[in-house]
Length: 344
Ligand code: CP3
Image 1 (cartoon, rainbow, N blue to C red):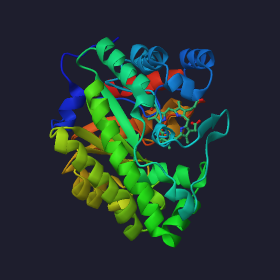
Image 2: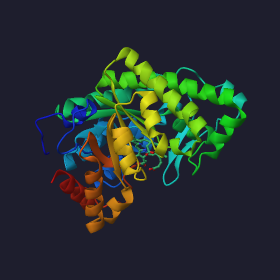
Image 3: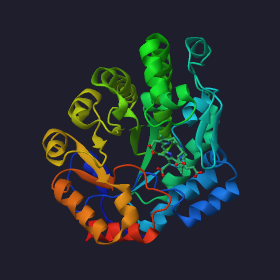
Image 4: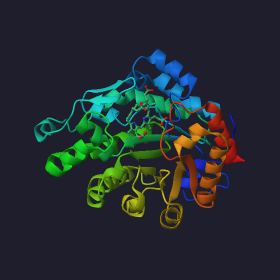
């Protein structure tokens, strides 16, 4: 495993630019790796893998061993929070998540307010196993979903292209929708604090569906709940390092950074370079933003795209990553090619 004498990842989040940016990939533990598929088959269901500390630790470490990334992200899912709130959550092969829909105020009235964190003991155990196995120069990332994104799956009961069910519910029944969000805020604070206590060095808040909201709803349902989570975490751990990923937030990124207090934002591949440099990277670190499809493509298209990301962002505080998760069909050789190109 390639070693570096410093802590490049944490240093960037503290505001120190690295000459060679730290690198990791969203969804770096996953189906594009044969060693993941092997463990996944052994574990049974997806949640069985998340809740088996040894196997979850193993798949978290696999991409670190293979590629020497600068950060590991704990293997779990954003939907473990609805699960610990007593909702039914299943992952069907080839279909994605299936939850019991929470799509009217009467159902919201029955929603538990306190998650049963005992159910997540295996995730905390996996964090401590991974922290013990990693060198100090490699950061361990804990995470949760932003309340808006988690709520989109809770309301619809499954993924949708535009999150129409959650948007409709927020318009029709704002009080009931706000209750879902409030429950997620409170429990996400507790969940993130427990991850820090178990060994996470850094936290990431995934708001994959932030980009489907109009400005006023973005402020209310995405920014404000994220701000409250960060405030709640820092009330107990003042120097907690937090990365936000409001995917598709575009022109609203500077406002998100200002309001939430994140140390870094993860940006997708559609972000406008000069705008991000001037209005976002001038204030916090930036993480991103290679298009996962060019990583599937490889060849000179990949080299050019990596060079472009580096030329755009590597003069400032920067963490190299993809603009969203790696796709299962991505060739491993292309990940190696990307790393050689970034690290020179
Ligand atoms: O390596 C890592 O990034 C750590 C683990 C991780 C997973 N999910 C594992 C996973 C993380 C950080 C997540 C976050 C997550 N989960 C998000 C936010 C980030 C994003 O990608 O947008 C969302 C929206 C979810 C919800 C979710 N989980 C969906 C929509 C799906 C189905 C889509 C798919 O890729 O199959 C999952 C399942 C899931 N979560 C898998 C993995 C590795 C695939 C399941 C499998 O291996 O069978």
